[in-house]
Image 1 (spheres, rainbow, N blue to C red):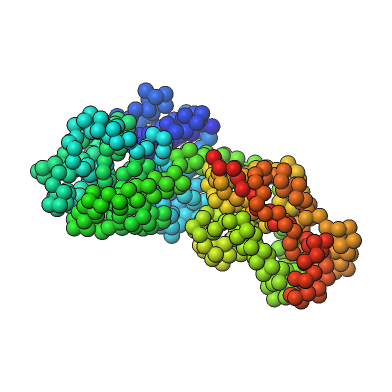
Image 2 (tube, helix red, strand yellow):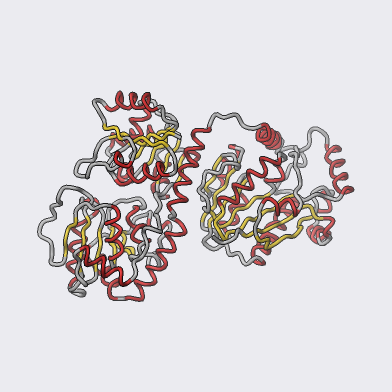
Length: 598
């Protein structure tokens, strides 16, 4: 597809994102202004056209849109998104960076509220910033997390002998190296870093401080203490060398949103000292993945000293932090996620398939009949017994498979109103994401369970990168998809977004014995046209599930007293449990399948 990226053309974020999409085979064009004080953009010599603003911004943007006719426009920095939308850019992705929200003037706050309601998709790289964007008007269904990611092959720890060679090449001495790669602006508290370093030198006199300035112009910080130096702009590969020789990394801005430099340092095996901002606690645990402090000289100096003096602490943090980056900040997965966002935006307006429309219509009829006699209700003993049995059986199956919910990320496909997904969160899962075809159910889930991330959409094209979730569940979703091609597409997407070593949990209808199925059909006919609507289904056998999910089967058991049996049998919990002990009387199958490790 053809992508027009807008923003400051010579900043690392714009350059690296444009290059990533270019390398993935997309036609990328970049437009915007050159940020003063930074080197000129390197994109042109890498085959990406760069268009600098000429004259008034809005007319210039309109000319750019006519000239390139992009499939999608991606604006970095909210003021650029506002200008792009005024110029008529559609579909439009607006990415907030942090200070364009946290430090916005009153006028820019008004503009932000305007664009957040009008962009086709709003992205941020931290949940704290995403929550703020939603408070200011971004709708939950059109706002998503997207992180820049880290290439963990390039950003990797150096061997001990390699560190010595790199230090010599970079002109650094043998003492411990403290690295700071953030801009030398007041927002990033460079004066605090320098003062903390001076205090630290009282305990570690041989320490060195490298202030890696991102600008091309020299920085004026006044006299620096002995052992501190400012390094100007260097090539990206040279920047990696600085990470790989550092003994500690410090990033203590006053506001921020999941900066890429922190994740790059962690990937290179550098223990970090971070300011106590909201984004940090989303994934990073103080004392395990980094040391988190107030951005003041004394606590920063103490934290840096601990990392240098206590080799055991430094080693533990280094190992945990790199594992965290590999698991949650994989660049390939993040770029796949962004491509999925683009694909979703460019495909909107395409008519749904007949199968999708049939499913949607069936569920609309069912939802409209919720108050009819016979509709599932928590006040019905048989329905409550059914849910309780499902939950007990599910947890027993997870235990039998050796699956712990603590801290994992879960995706539920066909999540309905979110009840079953919410219970997994209550049992220890760290994150619950639900995809549901019916927008009304998504709205109900968001109101009832605000901790869940509910998305209205088609599960045959999930908007997540491959390997995003530890556990992917579906509860009678696949049996409601009667079209074999669509069912296979949904299962393939579930398998794609599952992490290597992760598991699928499938709970679905299985074929009933002929007499029981006939009895159920007769009972539904007797209820007449005023009864609750039953959606058409296609039960799945164990072989059907095995064909959809080609991994190691950890659990495969039939459960639940058949729903076609008279309600009076299921209303009595003891009787229902006794009857469900007979396999021919069970209506559902619970299967857990593990995806092979990478």
